[in-house]
Image (cartoon, rainbow over all chains, first blue to last red; front, top):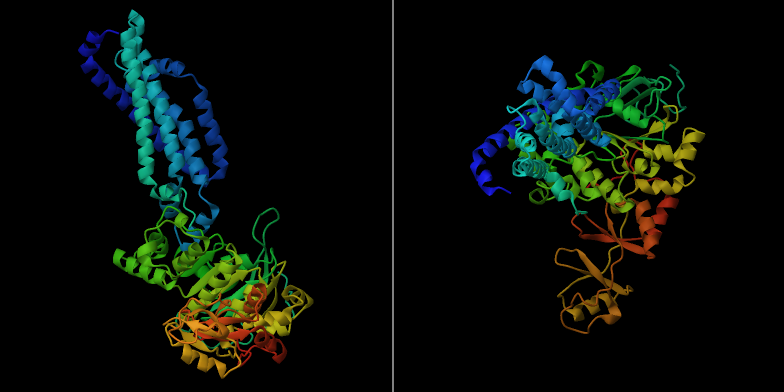
Length: 217
Length: 415
């Protein structure tokens, strides 16, 4: 382990970490928004449920390296080329979790909401969506961890991409283990950090779930 | 559409047996009228039960209980009133207005709705749950809060304690009360209640029923109440609509009439062979002649008490606290000869009967407790008198409930 090299490259680490978060963040946000629309459609119109899940399933099975490389002739060496596959892989996770979340809302709660005079829209945002939060956040955790991992693979598209994956590829090419770990360890920490952050977020967003544990009045 | 009527069904669509239909509204309620309402389901379509040519009128401020076996269309009938289900044909009028012409969302905000599983919103506090309809109606925050506190107090849940809790922190009975408060929030003239007490245990149910009757005395809402339990129907209903499978109205009238004069074999069987006994459900113990026990207060002089008791045949005297609430019985043979009376020698209580408890429930409680008599208390827990099994069984032989007329005013505590 070459400590001197590490100290010399801390600026690079900062830059690549920010790039990593940026690339993963765009993918998670975009994937979430697209999936939200698809999931609401799937739940509202049951006939679209099967096709939407099947499509996101198929996308998930395509190997990531293949997609990165296959997109280059179409979109060039751009951020778009990185983001398309990243977003693609979040869809399956998000669509499944958001639909499962919306489906988990108890029937009697929906019936009460309808009977009280909620419109469909207000019922979705004020009743169904909040109650789906635990499963939606589970999806966010999974998607962010997997996306943070996949960003490293985008280093295959050259030095302008890859986030922390840049160090992994560079270290591998010159046979310099210090540089490989210099990329790998922070990317793992980033994934763990994202996971912990979402758990915290969920606790804050669902105060009712905290009091539920262990209370039988 | 088939025009098969139960033999006791009124001929005219707006007829209401035993009720004055010309009276428009009492404070708080609105007339609800079914006019030849039919709901058919297509083959393969699932629904809670068809309804066949249902006509009945619920006068303003009355409780009408729809009762019948499962699949008789009682829940369907209820859900057609707030348009969760649309009728195939026929009309439903509230206060004379055809609900089909109203916006269903606005309609539902003016109708209270309580269901068996309560359906409280688990992610909202009790306060926010109660304020749901006011919020949908756009009330300002201060008015919502005032109303919420008022309703929580009304249903006996201390606002400062319960306002901020979540439904998962409440017992089944508390949740059910909150469900009722939520339905009352915007002060709707009409309430729909679908087996609201079906999911709680029998003791809690009895208490909730009594509370419900007490609330209704003050509120005078028009209430459509669905149950499969004939005892509940008889106890709660000003009017009872017995329905049979296929969505046919078998009989509609005050409970007394259903019990004494069932319109068909079906009704007679549904009401049960013990319908004489069931009439006891129409009588509240508070309305019966109660005997007065010899009472004493803790702290009174025992010598004086002995004097009071020896002149009579009673062996026990009832020890009360300063608010006239019973503490227990004291055997006169165990009274100290002098000095102030303490609460210690009191033996365990007889069953305490709320004055709203029906004679039928009181009878079964006394039998279950293996005692001859119980103490009737008012809603503050103060002693009103003593009722014995003999007093109750006398009601079986002397006939009908102490109801002055066959009008749909079953004997009910006046508070």
